[in-house]
Image (cartoon, rainbow, N blue to C red):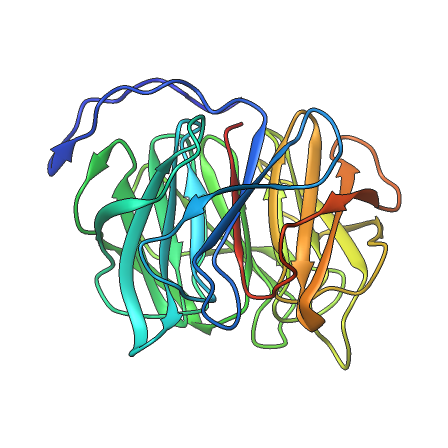
Length: 293
């Protein structure tokens, strides 16, 4: 489990201590320009419930959390590309509040976290970071090896992984507590774009995506050990532009293209095909997911 403690702020405004978000999964934003935030109980199965609203509607934002606070960054909405970062308290349903701004307005954002720092890679090769417990603007982290969009992202307490995108099978990683350019990790089993990913403390899973059609493929990696991904199983339906998060031993894949409302889940430490979890309140694509785990 990631660090759920409060870390002293190194700059910006220190936000007040808050309770751990537990096994709550959250999905926010989506196409066309939804400001909807839903939540689910990852310890069971069932339909999502309304959580609140983002500060503005947008799609293709990135998300991450420290277990207590969740961030939604960037995206595309009314007026074009967004640099907005919102935050929520995962344990307490309600509307999002302003956290700060990304270094550059962008969409196709992918977020990862080690429980202290949130890292956002986006359309282009720029990587930003923030300290999640401290509101304020993002700072430059480094660069990906090249311009990427539509990636899946996951992390453990040390590394953040960015996989796929641009019809690629590439997986790159960063060491989250440092600032630097990404390094090669290995390859997905299948090149694809608009996939989603989540993880527990050991294993990352990458699901769905687009490659000559919506894909059902699920891959997994051991985050601490660089190498190629291994086949995990299949989603119940092909999904692209879905959201993923993890908790209570599960990884869930929520909604996706064609305005799917359904949610799938797998048990991360096993392998096998996904099963039905329930439904979101509104079917939508290009949304972002995070959890309190």
